[in-house]
Length: 206
Image: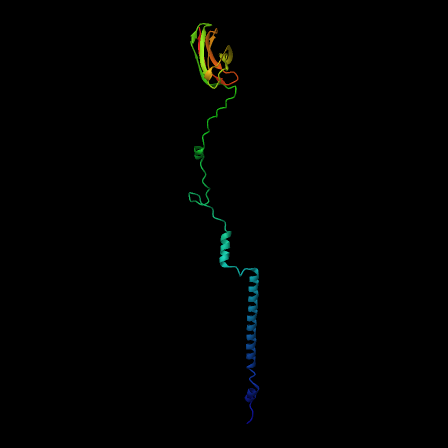
């Protein structure tokens, strides 16, 4: 039989099918190359994130850290309103609670400050000039045998009257005075060198 052109093409292969196979092979190769590139890029990106410490961060830890770094809330006051100033005692309450100033402390007695300690009485409170008037009294805290001085008030000051006597037991004493100054004469008895004095008596000379 004579050989036809179709038989010749079949024995040598279909020349029209070769381009299709080639195109398919190129497409598969490109896809494989793209997948390989994608894997490489993904791997490199993952390593970069791990190196930066971003990917390994624990969500719970991040949340706790964020909460810890938040600014603490302003404490509420007794009224329950947050952010308000703390209650301060009013001036009225402060004044009420403040201790009242105590009275002035009395000054300690010095050696020259008179301390009335005893008694004094006069036999008469109204006499004529230079009449004798008996004085009796007691100075507590003064030993027996102590010489005591009669004093008279003159021009707002105490002046020595020319009469002295000696104390007996318990600081008791007795003496007499003759007054020539008309009017009121205010007298007392004092233990010289001590603050011990008697109360005063007033004798009017007419």
